[in-house]
Structures are given as C-alpha cells and as structure tokens.
Image (cartoon, rainbow, N blue to C red; front, top):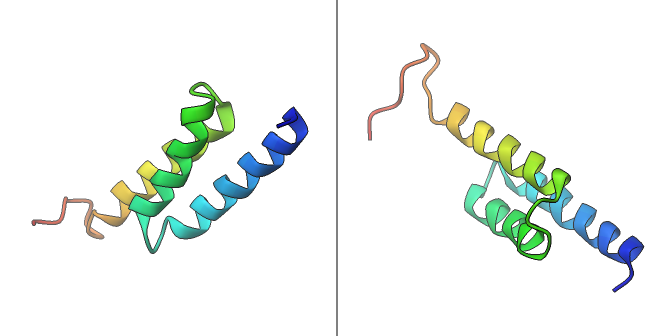
Length: 70
C-alpha cells in the first residue's frame, strides 16, 4: 500500500475511533491499536489513543472530581 493510501486509511480509522469513543471506548481502542500495530510510533495514532483514554477517565469521574465507586 502506498504511503498516501495508508495515511488516508489511518485517518479514516482514527476518525471512526474518535466517533466511537463516547459510546464504545473498547471498540475505539481496538481501531487505534490496529493503526499502532502497523506503525507503533505513529504520532496521530498515539495522540488519538491518549485523547480517548483521557476522555474515558474523565467520564468515569463524578462531577465533584471524585472517582465513581464500582
């Protein structure tokens, strides 16, 4: 696959991951990991993974800033 095609495919997968993150974070991370499996140090993949992980962590906290009990 040419680098331009791969970049377009990567961008599509990362966009789908960002869209999925709120409703299905596990599926979002699978998409991100598929990008990172091909290029482990891809800056956009790493940036998206970090953003999804932060969003999930924020969603698990209650409005007073304390962790939700499980």
